[in-house]
Amino acid sequence: MTHTRGALVVMAVAAASLVMPAHGQQPAQPPPSTPAPPSSQVPSFSVGVDLVSLNVTVSDPSARFITDLEQQDFQVYEDGVQQEISFFSKTNLPIALSLLVDTSASMDTRLPIAQDAAIGFAHKLRSQDLAEVVDFDSRVVILQPFTNDSAQLEQAIRRTSAGGSTSMYNAIYIALKDLKKVMATQVDEIRRQAIIVLSDGEDTSSLLPFEEVLDLAKRSETAIYAIGLRPADATASRGFKEAEFVLRQLAQDTGGRVFFPNQATELESIYSQIAAELSSQYTVGYTSKNQRRDGAWRRVVVRVGRNNAIPRTKQGYFAAR
Image (cartoon, one colour):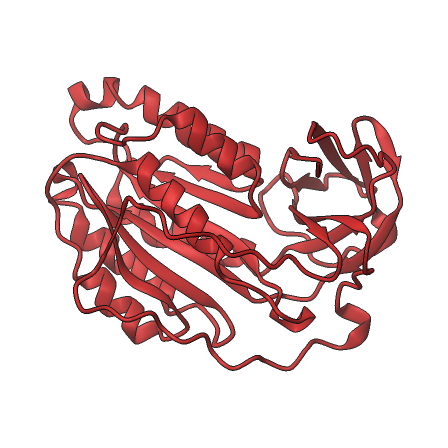
């Protein structure tokens, strides 16, 4: 979900002090702007009006994506009050995403399989998409700034190596800040934003508390897809409960999805499912009937008028002040 003022959200955020850029790495240049989709499919933004836009995934009970819905099939409620949908798009918008890879010592034997799965996902990205690679253990390192070059993304993922503790909260915080710097200057540059975080355990060394990271995530425009790779060791599995809670909360509150595979060999399928979801979403937007600029949390519910259709989106947003 995005909460936009006027035609676009244009934000610049100072680099987080926790980031350690990879040695010798230069920021990648964004790709040339791609032609805008047909005007009937481009979300129309009105100047001077606060808009709420939602990225909505709709599936059936068998988890198959439903992609043939129209605007009249959707109803949106904010704090229980039905809203008037002012724009609707089935256009597959470009994506900006952060690939976060846990490289703590516990990932040692599983990291090669995790690398292959993440690389497979990177090669599914289109020329108009952007992605960065973030490695986290005791530190957080941006191995590859945003690029549309799958070869550069692959090289960065291959450079990951296991060792150290787990600073997952720091990594998610930094990724959220980085995504805010992917600025749109015109309508055809608007991107859906996502984080895909892979981890095999609870956070053990972040400077930031979970509550602060969750608050930033809820204020962002970013869906978090969390992959909690369960530890193979039974003793370690008992300590996985905190990580499970954290990953579920982040995904649920941001409209993403959470996965808990038991084996690293399941990762390839999971990354494929995430890629398919990101290419199957609707954009639904409205101008809130509640014009109070009080900064309060507003609960949002989307319903779809088709039997067995299950919509999923962000749970709400903070109003402007």
